[in-house]
Length: 377
Image 1 (cartoon, rainbow, N blue to C red):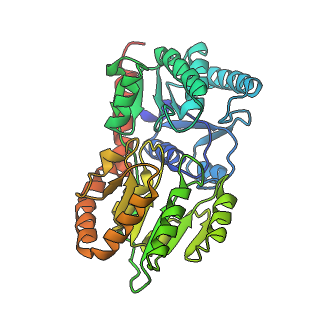
Image 2 (image 1 turned 90 degrees about the vertical axis):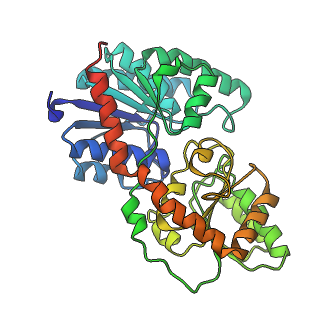
């Protein structure tokens, strides 16, 4: 079977700026470049990492907007999204359905099953087992994940820790899980020209949401300033708690914190950065960590989710407990005082990050697709 005759339907809840959206878009482009017929369905995107329709048109990807596909639970919208996906899949008749993220994964896999699409894969891009919802809602999602796993050939995890978390929750049989990692444009970041001679700069990149916990950094900045240090802190991203963060910074006189808002070009900030911090309460992978590694920026990150698969404490970065502003402040000061340690991390990560190139990621996914296509339904 030639690639151009193989139809791939990618489904994701939303394509807002962030790792799961960027990875899905890069996968769609990579598959299209290999000759696959690619369909991409998503809900409304509020702050895209790329202009979605333009990106899809340029790369000959068939984009389908499903306005009712939303992240939060809404029985009416969820049912309409299910019906739309069902009829779309019935019409397209894809060889493979590949769902991404939790909500699209549940609705998409049920739609695919009823539409007669027997070859379905799912990429959780992390999980929602802790940190996102109240316990009752989390348990409800876990129950749904267990049900729809019966309609899934394979579940593709970002990290080994993510795979083990799914197995621990008994989402599906262990043999259904495959670790595929993530894809990053390594060259774009590796070729950055680092700007020197500036004030020691600490960078935070991501959506300003409770799960990303930017307040942990702001509390650490307060502690660092109290000790007499005068570092610069760049916060890149937008989100529902951006205004709350700005108010906190203003109330605590954190004049050395700059909120840059959303940016499609985080590489320019990494070129000016001496240190990246990740403060998440839960993180499926932490794509920005690989981008920082490629750009030659050392990292301090919380020990949550899949991050420990990427960072080994004091070998290629520093891991700290989640929600500990004190440890974050201490680690930032430690690396400021120890440029040799920063260089040690940078040198290690130059090689380590290469395994997470976009090319490697797309090739891994293609091998799994080929395996699924030759298996009995």
